[in-house]
Length: 125
Image (cartoon, rainbow, N blue to C red; front, side):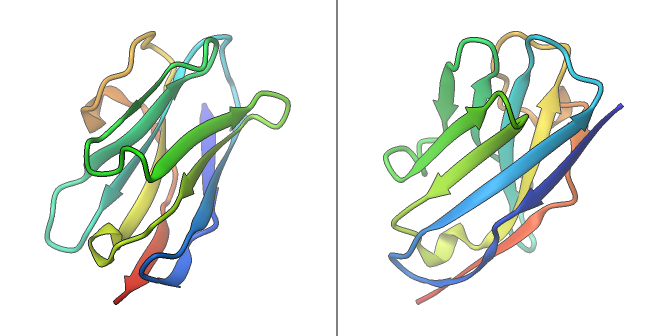
């Protein structure tokens, strides 16, 4: 099993920044995919960004490209999401997810086997 715990969410004004963290523990493999998704009230969970752990390749949703950056710290088993230039439409619960069976980035939530409980990001206008 893999446990994921997010942190770093909060209330921020439009244009502000946050750093979200996701610490992974438990069983891990040498290569897996870590992703960030978000879900706003009344909307479906959507892909934000993901990273392939062993080579650092990344993929971003068009809506966050240039504003969000995903990165990882191998020693800490932690993945980060730096979110800059926040907009009110970025308001959502942000979830960290892990796939231990994939070697390519998939944008579909069902491709990820493990999920964190989420962290709320609220952007005021």
